[in-house]
Image (cartoon, rainbow, N blue to C red; front, side):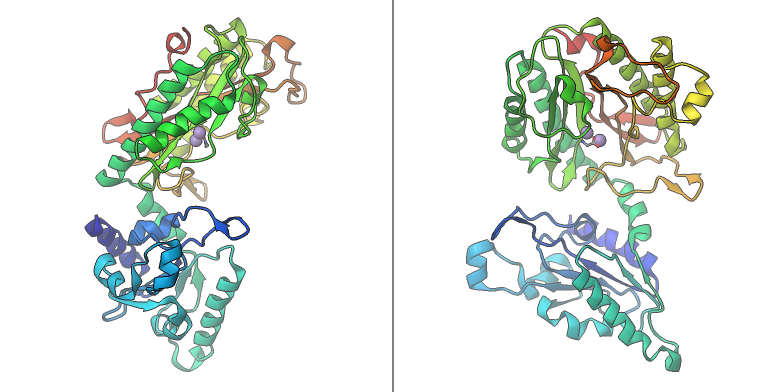
Length: 435
Ligand code: GLY
Ligand code: MN
Ligand code: MN
C-alpha cells in the first residue's frame, strides 16, 4: 500500500510544478470537555500520506533537490503516548511513510521557510483554524517582502483542491476493494433491517442492529449518522433522531452506510413497516424506482454529470403529472423547477474517502463526463410532507399522498463498458420490499 501512496504523491508532485503544497492533518475534535472523538484523518492528507495522526503537516516541494516530501509530526513522548496511543515519531516517519525528511511539529515555523521561499506559489487550503491560516499568510508575506529584489518567491496562495480532486475522483483497484468491503457490510445490514422491521419496533432498535454489524464485520462504524425514518419522518432528508415507534401502514426509509478502512458506502431503501405498501405508497415507490433505474442507465463513460440527474427529474415529473400532482407544461415545470417541493435534492454525489466525496461536477459551464473508476450514488426521491406546500400555481396535494417519503440509493461504479451497481446485493424490487 505504501507504494500506492507514493504513486499518488508522484502524481500530485507532478502537478505542483515549481510550487510548494502545505497540507495539514485533521485536528482532534472535542466530544465534550476533555474527551475527544475518535481521530479520523483528513481525507486529502490521508490520500497522499497514509499517515493517521493528528496535529501534523505535510509539505510537498517537487523543485527541492532532496526534500520533496516532508512530514512535521508529533515527537515520541512516553507520557503522552501512555494516555492517547503510540505515535510514529520523527525517525520512523521517514522510514514508514517514505518522507524525505521529518521534523517535530514544534519546528514548523523555523523549518517551513526553506521549503517555501523559492517556490513560485503556495498551495494551501484555508481551513477553519484561522490562527493556522494566519501563520501561513505571515510566512507568505515574509517571503514576498524581498520579491522585488530577486523576483523569486511565492506570488500566490492557491487552494490545492483543483489539483487533488481529479486524482481522488478515479478510484484504483485497491480503493475499490475497500469500497466493496464497505458496501458488502452495509448490504448485509440493510438485508437484516429488511427482515427485522415490524410494527411496534423503535427506529433506534433497527439502527442498533445495523450498526452492530458495521462493527462486528470490522468496519469503523456508520459512514454518517444513520437515518431510520418511519412514517412522516421519511420526508426529512437527514432525520437522525431515530426515536419513534413504527406503525403498521407506514413507510420506513433507511439510509445507512458503513465506513471501512477510510472508505464509505451509502445506501437507502424504503419499504413498508408492515407487510404491504398502501396504494399511494406503491405508486410512488414504483415511480422512484423507475427514476432510479433510468438514471443508472445514463451512467457510462462519456456521459455528462448532469445527465443522470436530468433523467431522474424527467421521469419523476412525468409520473407526478400522470398522477395529477403536477400540472402544466412539462418543459416549463422542469425549467422552473416546479417539481422541487417533491424532489429537492440532487440525484447523486461522488463517493469515496468522503461520503460526499471531492470531485469535479462541472468546470464553468462544462459538465464533467464520467470515466471508468468514478463512483457515484444514485438516489432520487419523492417527499410529500404532511404540511406539503405546492409550487405557486400547482394543485394542492390530497391528504392520502401526504406523509410519504421515498428514496432509493445505490452506489454505482462506472466501468469501461457501462456501470456496475456495487450495492446490487440489497434488493429493491417492489416484491422484495413487501412480505
Ligand atoms: N446519506 C447521505 C446522503 O445520502 O447523501
Ligand atoms: Mn448519498
Ligand atoms: Mn444516503
